Image 1 (cartoon, one colour):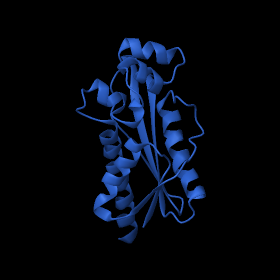
Image 2 (spheres, helix red, strand yellow):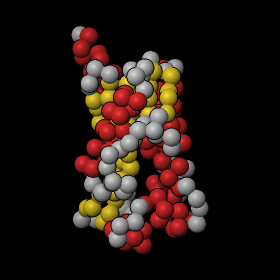
Image 3 (cartoon, rainbow, N blue to C red):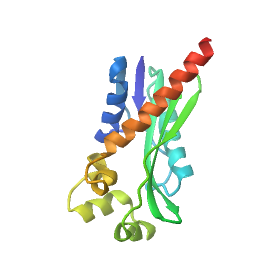
Length: 174
């Protein structure tokens, strides 16, 4: 089985590899566009970004049986601006599955900058005085003191996607 992932981000690739490790599938990262803004600003936009990445993977890598799109974003709530994270698994025959991940509020000093139009990744780099936070622990890792890293968060989403896909396969076979 060949799996395409619509990203070259190491945290996302690691999540897909870890989730599919027991299966021995071939994982291939491809550059797939999300067709949403650089900073997705709602659950809906973040879901669409994940779905678009997965669908675009299948167009780019014709040998892939399934494709994965993972997208991080933010969403406004009555409790502040929160991280939101979504994934999509799309099959060659057109089935798709979506799953969402952890949510935590962003600190005011970070949220204010994002609300003013800045992208979270560069804000996090500035905030932490590190480079490429989005490719490492992510904002979730920073604000959970590395109890949950970006890769682990996306791995959780991956397990939900794989579980839905397996359930659908088993349901069709019964």
